[in-house]
Amino acid sequence: MSVRNLAPALVWELFDDITRVPRPSKKEGKIIAFLEEFARKHNLAYRKDAIGNVVICKPATAGYEHLPAVVLQAHMDMVCEKNSDVDFDFDNDPIKTYVSDGWVKAEGTTLGADCGIGMAAALAVLLDENIAHGAVEALFTVDEETGLTGAFELGEGMLNGKYLINLDSEDEGEIFIGCAGGVDTVATFNYTDEEAPKNYAYFRVDVSDLLGGHSGDDIDKGRANSNKIIGRLLWEAAHSYEMRLSYFCGGNLRNAIPREAYAVFGVPMHLKSSFEKRYRLFAEDVKAEYRHTEPNFKITLNEIAEVATVIDENTQKALIDSLVGVPNGVISMSAAVPGLVETSTNLASVKFEDGNRIVVTLSQRSSVESAKTYIMQSVESVFTLAGAEVVHSDGYPGWTPDPSSRLLQITVDSYRRLFGTEPKVRAIHAGLECGLFLEKYPDLEMVSFGPTLRGVHSPDERIEIATVGKFWSLLTDVLIHIS
Image (cartoon, rainbow, N blue to C red):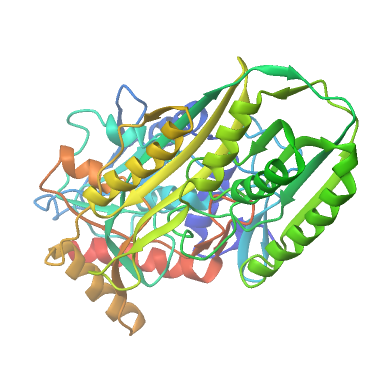
C-alpha cells in the first residue's frame, strides 16, 4: 500500500512528495527549490533569508484579516542514518517508504518523518481552502538537526505572527510548552602512527543492532551506547592483555545514540586464548546488562590479518580512559517536572580522521542553564585531563514554559473537544528551535505538537498512521478557534 492512499490524503500526498526530495542537514538546496516551486505553483508569496530559511505566506480568509498571523514551523532537514548493509545515497536517492501494521517506515534508512510530517501538515494548511483563519506564515528552517543553524540565523523581519505552532513533536496526545537547551563538545586527539608489533593476533570487534534513537527523547530508556561498550572492552584488553589499538569508528550524529561501532586491535600471541576467553565472558555480561532494553544486541569478534600500524601508546591510553571515564546518559531528573530528564550527555561518535586525528563528538542537554554548563565542564575536564583539545559549540537556549499562554489554552480546549480526553501538557528534554525564536521575537506565544513517531534518528524511525489524522484535526481546529 502506498502512503498516498492513506488519510488524511492531502497530508500524506505531500509527505510522499517530500520523501522524494533529498534533504540532508547542510545540503537543503533541493528541498529549498521544492518549497520555492510549491509557492510559485500555488501563487503564494514567499521569502527566503540569507541562510536558506523559507517562509510561505497564505492570506487571511475573508473577514479574518484583522486577526494576528499564525506561524506554522517545521525544519527541512532530516537525520541521515542507515543500516550498515544498506546501499543508499542520501544526497540523491528518494526515501523508500512502506506501510506495515499501522505504521509508515523506510527500507533500512531513517524515514525523515522528523520533520517531514510537520512540513507536510504546514503545506497542507497552505492548500486547504476549508479552514477559516487569519494570515498564515509557514516557516521552514534549515539545518535543525546538526546545529539549529536556521533558527540561529533567522533573517530579520521574516515573521509577523503573534502565535507559533511548532510541528516537530513526536508524541500524539502531548502538548509541549518547553524544551531543554544544549551544547556540543568536540574533543580532538593527535596521535602518532607506530609499526604494528609482530607476534600479535589482530582482531576486529563489532557492536551492532542496538536500538539507538534520539539523544534527547530516548536518553532515559536505558539503551546501550556502542562507543561505550567498545571502550569498555578495549580498556580491559589494554590493562590485562597488552592490547595495541589500530582503529576505532563508532556512531555518526551528535543527536543520535550510537547504534554501531567497531575497533581493530591486537594482543600478543601468547595471550590470545586468554583474551578470547575473557571476551566471551565480557560479551555475555554486556548482553545480560541490556537484556531488557536491547533485545537485538550483537557483539562479534573476528581474527583478521596483521595490520600495518597502531597508534602510539600514550594516545591509546588517553583515548580509552576518556571514553570509559566520560559521563554518558541521564545525569539528573527534574525536581520541578515529574518524569522529565533535566540533564544528560551523549557520547555520540568516535572517528579517526585524516592528519592523524581522533575526533570525539558529544552533546549535552539541560532544562537548567547552570546544569547545562556544569555537565559541559565535566565532559571537558575528562578530555582535557587526557590531553585532548576541547571546543564547544555556541549552544542553544532552552524554552521556558508559559502555562498561562492563550495559545496553550486554545490548544488544550481543542484537544478536549475533538477527542474527549485531556492532553498532557509538558516540557521535553529534546531541543526545539523555539528558544531561539523567542530570542528574536520575545512576544511570541508558542506550543508544539505532532503525531507519534518512534525510533527517530535511527533506521527504525516510523510514524503511527492513526495519529496523523488526529494531528491534522488538532492543527486545523486550533487555527479555526484562534480565529
